[in-house]
Image (tube, rainbow, N blue to C red; front, side, top):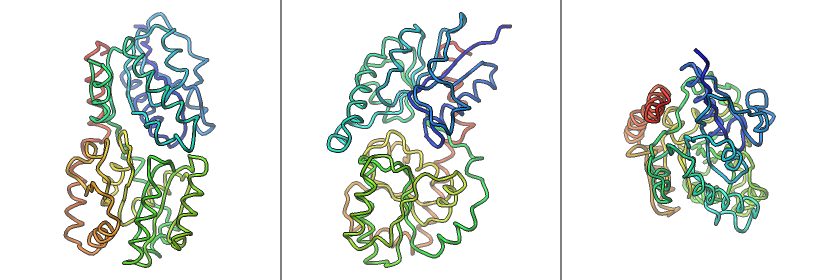
Length: 356
């Protein structure tokens, strides 16, 4: 029996990137099923250059009729795939609206605009479009996709059952309450609104500390965040960690008191389910994909009333019974995103297009 090929394509690949992580897990699932499966990307960070192949190295085999493409931003990859004349299993991770970059990053704005246009052009080549959230599936339906499904990002439990960095854990225990947000520093993530919330919270809890974990992704945005904290005279309560090792990130999750999100655009919100798994209560602005990912778990709010939110945080810190109920419901919710459950969904999708 000849080996069957089913490869994945994406714009960029990097260690710690959610889409790269998704593709890596899918590749293992495919290999477990007996497929020859590689990941190809246009831009490859040195952290994954031994694990991901450049797009230029791809050569279509005679038995190849399908490919998996992860779409999240404009790039040359859709044009490349069109030339290969492959049927696509499209996995859509959403595209951040251009308005968030209009004043800060014209190049990023143009890539987002191009990505939106390519989402339309990909319809003809796509046999099945799988969104990683129900919110993203609605967007696919709005632009004319007919054969759609939801395939959420899976949580790899092994990556979050690591031993803690005990030195870092001891350092974190010296402050509190400890607020955490995980995500690249970018205008749509609204880290500046978390700084505003910290200002009001420190009026109630002077030792409160906000930890922003993630790449200093958008040029100048990180400096603006730090300048804002300095202007509010709360700089001592803010830490921008930059990108972390997996062990250190897990240590932050398990030594924080509350995960807080003010993000105004999420296609999925992977840190939400990571927080659920790590028993970290969540307080999140309920917009875009957040209500779909959280369902009735955690605590969602729909108005950025900073004083009221500061009081709510204080309540969540002091009311143990309430906190335990929130964590218990989050534990129930996260089961839907554990790898075995999502893998079963993926295999069902393959069956719908006749690949297994």
